[in-house]
Amino acid sequence: MKAAMFYRRKEIEIIDIPKPEIGANQVLVQVKSCGICGTDNLIFNGLCYAKTPLTLGHEYSGDIVEIGKNVKHLRVGDRVVIDPNIFCNKCAFCKIGKAHLCDNLVSLGVIENGGFAEFSVVPDTNIHKIDPAIGYDEGALVEPLACCVHGIERAGLEAGDTVLVTGAGIIGNIMVQLSQLQGAGAIIAVEPIEKRRKIARDLGADLLLDPSAQNIKAEIKRLFPAGVDIVIECSGSLEAQEMSQDLVKKGGTILLFGCSPEDRRLALSPFKINHNEIKVVGSTNNPFTHARAINLISNRRIKLKPLISHRMPLEKLAYAFEIFGSEETTKIVINPNS
Image (cartoon, rainbow, N blue to C red):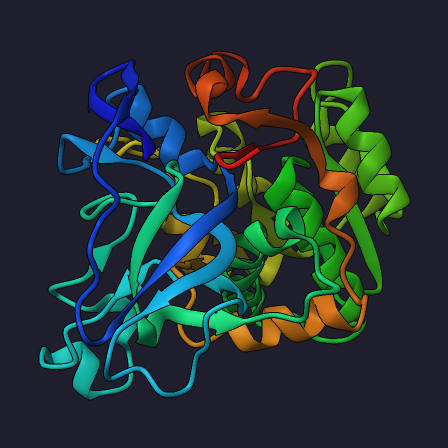
């Protein structure tokens, strides 16, 4: 089979390897679509750890083509999406219901081979069936949607809240939609790329701001003198992350959701956070939120197709990383079996 093997910073090669064999509690998935996310990009650029050599890719969908002898709830031919996070179920965090913080977490596409290949071996516990009416490319976006569902819960959004989303890429535009579903009173999207701002407008943003042409602090102060209730930072930009403390109102919440290098440090004001009772929260992975994400897609509560800008074969993966994050892109999906 063909697989995209990542060796080191900016070095990926399409190689032929034997089709993997499965164990008793595993399934073999023929990968139909696999998205590139910010974590993949950080790994590709040497800014985030991955065990190498490795097949990257953790946002993927496909069809089951083989099942292990102990697997009873799945069938060959099932259309499925993958939860890439494999928990140990033994550590202290797993035992208190916080498996996404597992001390021994193994992630497909980071520690074990992932979805940028024609086939992928997946534990049966990490498989979710989807309706055949859901396209494979939409299916590949279940994983980031599931992460956002967890994130919006961490933000504590309540009906009527004013929400500021910084960065209107794939994640930001999912957050815009989830904020609308949660009953946000107003949604502001901050994004320098016009194409992405237009998508945010079409998906529910009430106000669009361009940080390359506008003073965001001044605009927010003019429109919302007390600040906004919630800032959802999705860009991963150092400037946007630090600016969040000046945009949120007293008693408000900042959700740091965008991907960042492990060694980044922020200049936050402890006085401002303390004095104004600002809550700064993080959000990682997708603890048991895949089923709800699939439900949102199945019932057309969330629009994902407008977020996909490029579909490419596996052979163009290196090029996809080259253009990742550029003005022409939103979500790039790779179709290994196209």
